[in-house]
Image (tube, rainbow over all chains, first blue to last red; front, side, top):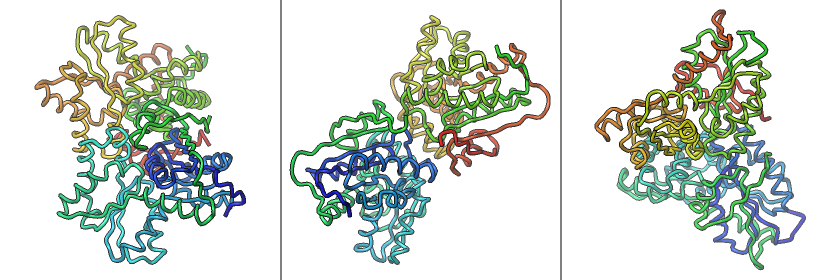
Length: 275
Length: 275
């Protein structure tokens, strides 16, 4: 896949903001020895409100920066960016690095485990309107009834309140939508949602009187990254791991929230990619 | 103030997004014959989460564009931008146009009507942390007890749900903060908040058992603009009004929401200021 087989080359991860740190956290759990460069495009967050053309321009520039840092694998840890720009980024990167997104690993899981089931999906407006999951499910002719609904405010609400009671009011409004009733599983198609996983489970226990599967991609994606590195003989299993966390605009609230998403305190650095 | 006294020159208004359309609406009501150019920097919205340096860079570039359009007056219809960049924009513009912001007219009103009163203020984190109202109130030695609290998610919630019941849950969490108790008036320091004015009034009627004054700046600011144009012999009172509404990134949801803020359907045009 790549010409440079130095296994110490870092894994590059990018997201529209710091939500992708939930994916970075899962990655570190599965691959503790890997060097990691995280880039959060906080100058343009949230991508959920941006046009496809704008997200494509941002994603290519970020991918270019990660290539300059010699990343061996680039993980698009953002559903809006995957929907708008995965094909473009993959084309742009060519064989210079492996490219992984947060959608394909989940579709692969559906294929094996959810035939004939009714699946709900929640995400930002951009992710939902892109129809990216539905298109992939249909192109693989999977016998799955997938209904997606945009829960646009949830990500910002989680940034503002964390896992707070007020989130339940938003869930009551959003999850009451007809397309999300009588489902067997719910895909959390936004990197922020794992933080409120238990509230969503509880909501469905109360409204449907049963436990549904919550499909949280971060773990699934981390496993896919490990497998892809292994297949390409690029796994790093020695030395100490270096981690850099960059944001394109720096504020104290990003620094505070980073802990919420990564689970531990990290040092956020300002990387002026757009200045 | 300005060298070019052609009264048909437009009024330029800018905001981080389309919330400033509530101010544009008040302006049109007070000045129906004026030509108007509105610029919403939707590529970077919301400013509430951006750093001061980033907002300053955006504001100067927008002001430059409005000057190129020969605006006679530039209205910064955004609290975050006023807090971060008003002094800089005023310096940059010099005597080429009048510059008005959304804070000074309100402080002027406080001076005349709220001596010895306890006033609350809600706005984005950026507006509140800037302490801009407090600093102005203090520098004028006004005998006013002002407490500001950041209600960061309200603007996005209004964009998402409009004037919906779920907003009450957010108000219950936010307005329960100790700094917003036992107040005589509440300043709505965000252009989105006039849309939920009645809910805020009702909240205080229930929690404080009395009616408080809600200080909505859009009307106050429109009056200030009229007065400033009048003093500078720049009022336009003949011909038909031309209005242009530009956004730096275009999505259908901006187009839909424009009606919510402006009160009637308008034609939003994409202006690629950052491409």
